[in-house]
Image (tube, rainbow, N blue to C red; front, top):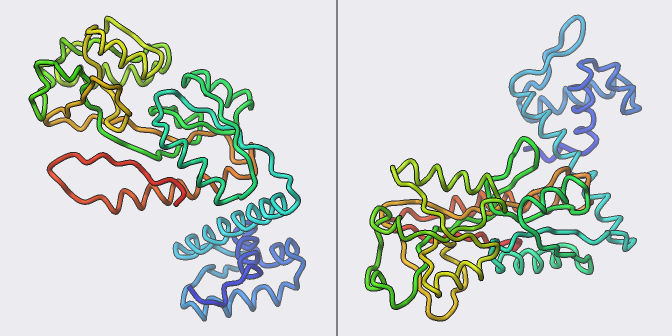
Length: 316
């Protein structure tokens, strides 16, 4: 896009797109109507794009103009957010970012998030608050948390949700299990032995997804033991209460191993969740970077017949 696109022109375009009238737009940005319309017209000539159709009773955005007007609106909003954050950092007025997290979120994600936030906003602090997903969502609703890192799914009608990580679900077993010599396991052959699951009350929607995944294969879930933390799940496996499905990237206790499931793409998905970007001055920057990084990580994936764990490198 032409270097002549300045913040001044962006404001002119935004005001004109909102009012669909050069006169009213000029009043909004405190400039003469002739100057505003001339500069927009000159800019249209420079980029060879007609932004507005001039009508007898006002303006009409062209299809190409809608793209430019959207860019103007987004850029100006991001610039205002940047100014607010920069001033807050300079004045040492950035409040601690209160981040909730579930025990089922990989600790490496939290470490990367903390390190990245400190690089972005040096000297600004993070407060971590552990809790099951439902509790974290309640705290978000009550504004005692600014954001959270939680397992998916999360209702995107109620919250802003940006996926940040994904890795395969694998079967966790004792290293002396009869299946330990296999490189891959068949879900139909081991399903009856998979009896240890996270407590359904911790994250009902995630449990419903598991039920659906099993159901699509014509398999019934055999939940006989439930746990509130990953460490409880691994303890139950070690004590021979059954097998469990866990995130492939989870650290394993001694005496335990994992095996991939042949032919399935079941994954543990993690997201950055918040209610409103106005809840904390840093949220727009964090969400934007996580979104861009996630999209880039998806583009970089190499096709492979073997499912490769994918974990986003946060804020690097």
